[in-house]
Length: 234
Image 1: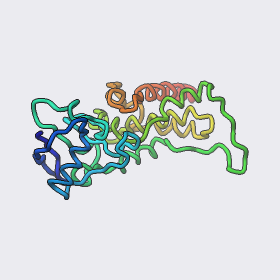
Image 2: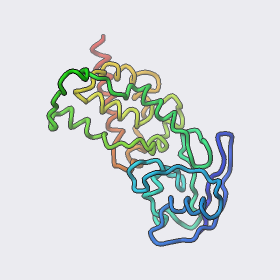
Image 3: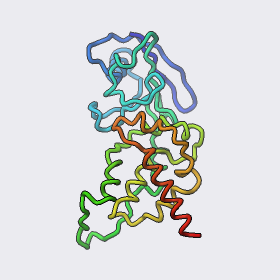
């Protein structure tokens, strides 16, 4: 089986071709590991759980962002070689390992961090699990920060200031969380430059999310609430 793996760093690089033996139920991560263990021990990549729980093995496979541990070679192989590259829209540290700092920096910019409404000395607030806000917040809590949606987003590719689908989805989750005291801070953060109104609703984030989340829906919610907030201020 012919495999082309991207080698290089932030200054540039190129694809390197390898011939890898094919096995039954072989994943793309298995292929990368085989190359590192048998052909080139200097190949750099990132992984942890190998069972689709951590998201750290995300890479571009034949131009599509995927969890390599859950992507079987037979699903993506065709007439040509299987190409494996680091996630797009992020700087490259080395080979297949992308720098995740810009991705998480966008979370902070979007105020997608918990704003406590009580101190630890106060009793825990009880929230009904079937309340409207809790139900809405639950739609995005399965995000594991893998950056697949960020790599899939063409708006991020064309606008480096755009906060991106994951950060905006997290902001929407916290906006609907009754225990979060930062609703206005969130609206101010996501309505500014690079905020939710930059989204073109192309839907790549929803199409490629391995956990079947829909960041575009969350972004639509933020667009709606920021407009309401703007009208209230008039």
